[in-house]
Length: 254
Image 1 (cartoon, rainbow, N blue to C red):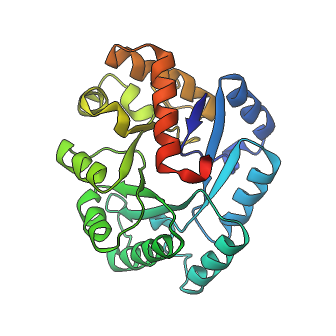
Image 2 (cartoon, rainbow, N blue to C red):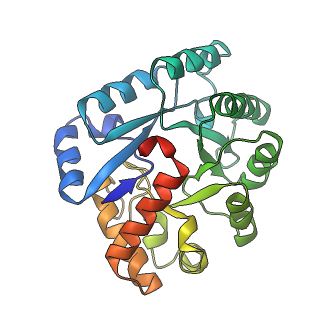
């Protein structure tokens, strides 16, 4: 079995054929899909998705790219939602220094407040961090959470080691399947396999064979095969080990 630790199956891109997308994932051996929210309103679409599809489990969170729609009251709403339906994790949360015009102070406020919520509920976190690993790690050292996943990891080996030290797994998906992604491919080979979980981030971050098309959870099987080939391991071992890693860092999956 494979676990897609980060998949936006609720996204509008899947509106025309969401049932078929889900069935293809199940047929490809994807036994669980973690569906993270990105806004308070979006939690409702995530909830609907997870009620409809048995293999889908929710994460509740406020994404740093949507700070223009976040309000402080949404933090209280997040706590109420956790009380009503305990999620697998708090996410997708974090910092984004890649997109221009996103106020860092506001991002950091929502990020740290959600770390506090994760700490209070003893939940792991799903981290978004583009060009922001150092400030993300800084706050993780301040607010001790039970670990989680550095989603779509693209940092340095030193940063990877620090995430691992703090109890995190590193999410690898379509990005490392491109031959030009030499630094990511080196990390995919050299990092301990015990530190790696698999994800698609679908409909985004398509793997090389999809090109500029829509990504979907069924592609996780071939992503796993690519990791196996790069590491010189049987695909079955990579599937089993990454599934074990996901269960270890996300206890709500068990």
